[in-house]
Image (spheres, rainbow, N blue to C red):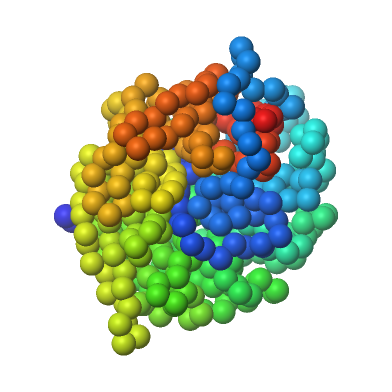
Length: 437
């Protein structure tokens, strides 16, 4: 396959890379950004979209689960982080100028802290983030990347690749970087989407450009700890795994999935996975038996890659390929020997379970549109793009829809967040809290 660069026409010819909101599947073993936080990062405490929820109700009343609160929020697909009674996410404000009415043009992104009990705004940090003229934003301008809680700090990256480290209590900036201006990184046509990850005293993110495909920033002052590689960056979020006792950083890049040493970015292994447009969006799943699950749409599918270490070296061996399991821009969840995800790109979709060892389907459940999901109390909490919320009981050979309700509007492309029995969800206009107990 010929490599397709993000440059020139690719941005506008993307068939439909809508949310990039989810950009993720998950890892079953990872280092959380802040072990004390309730939902500190993309994917939650373990970065795997599983929650230690209390017992969830198996039935909902007419109209869906109890709504604790609901409010409008600006445009965006960033997921919600939670800690100490506060929610953190991002949204966008766009306003055209009107000289007659004295209205100035606005093209800002906003980091917002909300009260978890009421949805009330506690603080906001707003900054200019004009979109470039060749960005394709017909499905929404983002932001897509999910914030990261690191102690008393909050790290965010906007659609135009502006990174902030903020004081969590006040929202005041501590340090920031503009990847495009400072490092000449090319702004991704559908907007930046990868969510940052913490390793020891660093924040690691894809940046892009020669010698800086992956960059680690010191969380204290924002200085570069290391930068390496020329890989084409894309939308998938990084994750940390443990391979036979060694910590490794997995990065799903434009043409391959790679393992790096998080201390210095040294390449440990790589495996090819070329998709059209370099659109590898879904964060890989680290499953049992040292098997890494990766999946894409755009003419590709899913792979199971077994990682093993011997004499200090890691070997990546492809175990299977499934062309029919195609996760577009949603996330997936690994539980035991199964990976759950919404398969489909531009046609019909189905919720599916794949065996991590063989790649074979255990079951397919139709009737649920393209979805994001979390796993809690032995159940899948599913948010479909048409706004339907569902509670699904996965079984060995099938799935049972226990309850469902339509509570959101198109496009509901944000991965849900669950803390205790409370589910936090959003679409492009609203954010709400639901009681699933």
